[in-house]
Amino acid sequence: MVDVILGLQWGDEGKGKIVDFFAPAYDVIARFQGGPNAGHTLYVKGEKVVLHQIPSGIFHEGIVNLIGNGVVLDPVTLKKECDKVAAFGVDVRKNLFIAERTNIIVPTHRALDKAAELAKGDEKIGSTLKGIGPAYMDKTGRNALRVGDLLRADFQEMYQKLKDKHQQLLNNYGFTEDISEWEKEFFEAVEFVKSLNIVNGEYFINKKLAEGKKILAEGAQGSMLDVDFGTFPFVTSSNTISAGVSTGLGVAPNKIGEVIGITKAYCTRVGSGPFPTELFDATGEELRKIGNEFGATTGRPRRCGWIDLVALKFACMVNGITQIVMTKADVLDSFKELQVCTAYEINGKQTDEVPYQMNKLPLQPVYKQFAGWSKPVSACNNWNELPAEMNAYLDFINTYLGVKVTYVSNGPGRDQIISSR
Ligand code: GDP
Ligand code: IMO
Ligand code: MG
Image 1 (spheres, protein in one colour):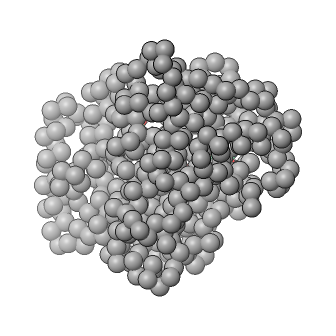
Image 2: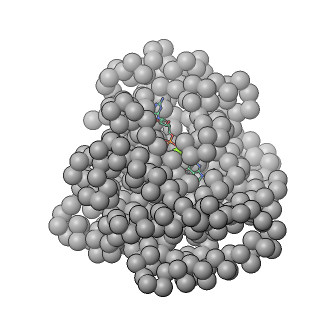
């Protein structure tokens, strides 16, 4: 079976840490969508590492890591990342595999991302500017270059043809930056990628399944950034939800087992777009400070607010979530009162459903208040030690969502996690 770990909010829920924690129970860890817009933080031998494209199982000896066809891959970022993990003694030629159908991010995708965002002005999405949108547009527009193409004798011509197309678009935007340095880096990185294990991802993974191997699919971004079900147009360009696992790896839906959703004990968002429970006051500032809420990819301060059960329940529904991991519970340790959003009020009417295009609506969160914990969660070592106030918080959330929080993460380290079982 293929189990899935994915984010239920707007990204940065702690997927990297949780995948790293669960990894020893699996034979293969696979990324199925997204690209270098992701920043997944884990701690290896006490040192912080941020992964953008390599799956978060890479530091475990004997586990296979697969970059699936649904990913958009930037060779430049991948090369840098491979150097980074090699410094920890990881042999990427042994345990990293790349699907040949994976689409490639070329330098002009990054230029187009930048030009498009500039043109949007105040309506900009707040993209990470890694070329994600333009790369996925070339995939659905049937123009993209894929990893398998790198091995073709005519790759250079294919690249030039695509670049010429992009140049016309860039001219329309009036984009004049010199990208020759990016191109130089790109071609160096392409040679490197060609030296890695390039495989037919769908056969690779289905053969593993036939052998009875256990696969874990690692989501990037979050459900509310899904191109179909997120807060469109303030979303990323891939299907971040569990359905994306099938198209992003080539595994049939009936092969999907557990779908583990990750939520912070509160909520954050980076970039533009609606965020009903966002706090603009000292409490929001406090969450950012204590939670160290700055983007792992761009360093931007993350917007912070209370947990939003309306959005979470929606995310559980579209993903088929079977259990929940709540991260960063320790960040709430010092708060006297906590709020939980249970409904949205729109034009005087309450709803517990996520509306179409919530950015266009006068939407107010409706809160239920909870008491903060009397003792720090960060000091707890097992479920029985959790403070009564936290149990009340969790009980309410479990009942509202109809799905149980089975793990609470109480610190960034690999072992700072408590299981309910
Ligand atoms: P991802 O993109 O979902 O992998 O999440 P990020 O790595 O972008 O952001 C999560 C941040 O929270 C990282 O800095 C993690 O080290 C940190 N983190 C994860 N779990 C916990 C936790 O339980 N407590 C605290 N304090 N930090 C955590
Ligand atoms: P991980 O995997 C948080 C956000 C960007 C922007 C929008 C579109 O670390 O959780 P894009 O670069 O995809 O065109 O940006 O999506 N975004 C993320 N926010 N975590 C991420 O990844 C994100 N990847 C993209 O900030 O608002
Ligand atoms: Mg992140």
